Each structure stands twice: as C-alpha cells, then as structure tokens.
Image (tube, rainbow, N blue to C red; front, side):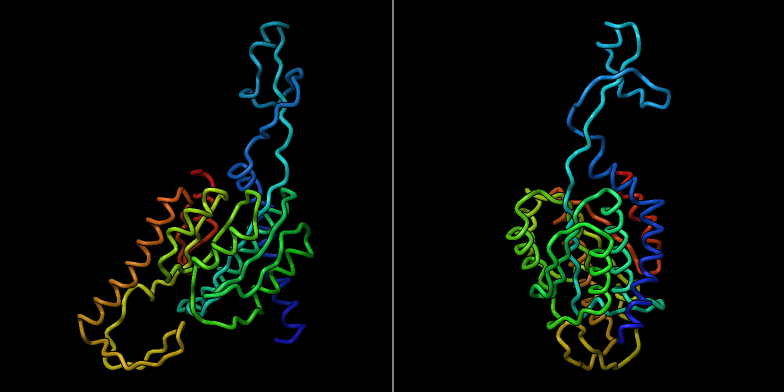
Length: 287
C-alpha cells in the first residue's frame, strides 16, 4: 500500500470513528470506566442543573440551603488496546474482513480515551508480540496506532493470547483499562488472564463471522488453515466432519466466555455484519 492510499484509509477511519467517539462513546466510556471523580474536594451551594444525588444533606440541614459535594476528577487513566493480528483475522464473508471491524473498534476506543485525556497504548500480537507502542496521549499518537492497525504485516499467522497477556502484565505496572480484541480462536489463557485481571480492568471483544460457525456441505474441498498456512482436502459432505468442526469452534467460544467471566473481566461478542456500536453501548451501559 502506497503512502497516499494509506493516508486516505487512515483519514476515512478517523472521520468515522472520531464521530462515534465524540457523539456516542466518550460519555459512556467516561461513565463506565471513570465515573464521577472519586476524590472529595469541597462543598458549595447548589446551582441549577446540579445532580441532586450530589447534595450533602448534613451541610444542607446546617445552613438551611442546598449544598452539593464537589469531586475532583480522577487522575488520568491508561488504555491498552491488545489486538490479535493472526491469520484468522483476515477472514470475511460479508464484504468486510474481521480485521477491518477490529481496526474500527480499536480506533473508536482510542478516540474515546483521548476525549477523556487518557493515554493509549497498543499491543499487536499473534503467537508472539508483533508490535508494542507504549501509552501516550494525543491525536497524532492515535493516528499512528490506526496506521499500524491498517498496514502492519505480522511475522506469524498463529495465535497465543496467553503470551500477549503475560507481556501486558510485564510491561504495565499501573492499573489500566484493557481491551483485548480478537476472534479468540485460542485456548490455555485462563491462568494468565486471572493474573492480569487482578491488576487491570479487562474486556474481551470477540469479533467473528457467521460463516465460521458451521462448515457448509460442499463435498470434497481444499481448505486453507489461516493460522498454519496448510492446505488440506476436507470431505465437507461427512456429517461427522461438520459436527467435529462445529464442536471445536464452540469449545473455543465457550472457553472465551467462561474464562473471561470467571476472572471478572467483561465480554462483548459482535459479528462483522452487526453494529458493533450497539453492542459496545449496551456493554458500557450495563457496567
């Protein structure tokens, strides 16, 4: 991809995702992860428009006039975007690849954090750490993250979520807000997630395609394994082959849901042909 085309793509994603973060997500993100400031600052007289939940009833009774508590904004937070760029993310059947939706979600989250003056960092992973961008503030930093999400070419096509979570725990010493964006076609990350979730507020966002759920009956078909690069001849007319495929797929999906829920982490599932905006807003509101 030449520079002109890349900049055009970055700009297109910025326009779409920044609009979403400005008008929809920044307030919800703020409420979900920061809430009202936690540090009490002072008491002042009630003014029209103040939240009645902030009224200090003891002071109000003492002065016979409504007073509200004022809170200082929490200190800035750090958001880490952990993005799976393994081979399976290049799958797509509805005019859009999974990685396109993953890029949009990551960009939207990044701009939402920027609205709240938070730092944003990026970890691109396969079965190794492909790229690490330390947390930093600002629009130019977010645009760099978007550029990497669009054009970065992974060295490996496999997935190892445990390795990525281990790297997160090793590099991020202070509590952060972490979004792991992947199709979660991986296992054996329960222990590392348990350790990471004790320190960080983690949410797993599973992006998937409806065509991945079931193997169609097409007879003998040559299939490419996106994560190993191996081509195999598969008899898709065999019911046992189709059932085995489906079982393996749902075993990984259920493992994701159960493992994240058990560790106290958040779970979001969004299909490429669904509105991730609706899914994320629903998740934020439920927190």
